[in-house]
Length: 335
Image (cartoon, rainbow, N blue to C red; front, side, top):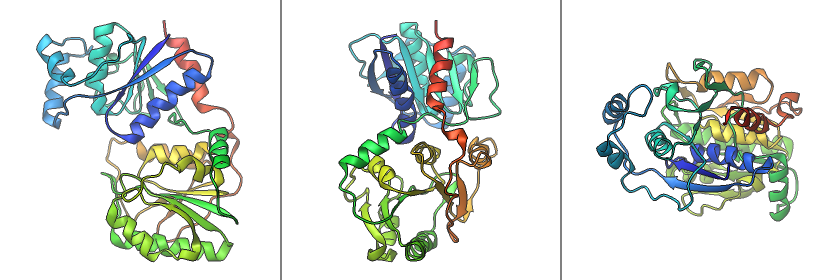
């Protein structure tokens, strides 16, 4: 295997999962060229259902018209791929058609529904409901975060003095609705914790947070309780790894499984914060994924109205390299 193409559906979380697996393959002794390509057209839900039907149960029944439609605007790298890799449902049509075109394995990270398992060579899925022969169950989704990487990033970051904790802020999603009061309560809880334990916060928002939430947090946070901030809508500095590596503890909002997993993989005690309005879709893997992490002692889930510290000791399950185990499973499956 020499070249991996990652199909990017535009979601930073999905891209982080794909990059995490690709970089892990490289770090485990494989000389790789990794290229990223963006999907072309985006289709509505009804259009996606129709395209799935046209492509059939194996995902190979695609006319030249359909290929041209899906791949329109896709810029392909010069080097031919040996493997197609993606995460996120919107990437699947492009990934499947490119795998057909170049006759290479297509590996998917995440919950594959509603696509048939036969569309993929291997699926690394956190969903207990996906159990086809090529569905490989994983306890942690792959990310590019490791204790060594956050330590290195912290070394290059001019960290403020004193005990530091990190707050990784997401935002509203289909399952998680943050209201104005949620952000105000979060800021006040952060102020109280800082005063109680003598720590200061390294705060970074994300693309999902939005200006309104950032302004509320900035307004209600006590400046004395804050060591450094990244407000993504104003000045999107990429300091996540540095903040994780500089912090004794990590707090992260529950709306993103990627952010939660990245926090775990930093090796710090992790508190996961849920807003008051959480409604998991009936078929979503997210609820069982979070429950599994909590059962293993990898996270401590706490409501936004009463934020509490995670236990100071990380359970042994995080010590083995979870991404390395995924890489080994993939290598065994590849031709």
